[in-house]
Image (cartoon, rainbow, N blue to C red):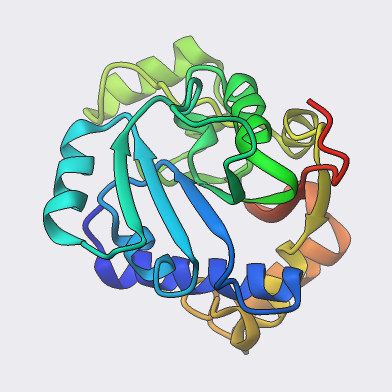
Length: 239
């Protein structure tokens, strides 16, 4: 939450993907970051967009953001991703990065994202796949694959917690989750064009790991540990 370098790198990837998608700079667009945390990413985004609003249910995180980051076009609010305090069609861009698994009902959150986006607006969606070897929140192998009772027991036996609250989905579950949007998949490009999308920090180019990752996203996308999608709301603006 407080890793300024790591979160700054994620923000640069967001900007690169969004600028590539729109084919231009983002200076006339309004953005909401759903799950702002401590505000580091929003602070970087605000340099590139007309307006940035960060929202999070974590009151302490939002207070940290307010204390440490200030700009005329930057705002932080405490709020629920499943019931956002914004009017319909308030934003051109939404960010939903590594958030869906933490929300009690991700379907409701995406209905809200769809609602607050303007017609033709987009959501930058970065998501982990349930079919992952290592669960990043607890650094435990195969945790996300286990049924909930076994996952809870696994956490207790390893001393990492008492309940596994994260709700990861498979590739096919994620497709169903975002079915109201037109999906533009940037996963392969962010893996195979690290210089363009500032992703070398995730997989170092030229390594065996990079070659394996490239093969997976080109030939077995369902097995990729994560995805980066741009989700487009219809320009006709149907609810």
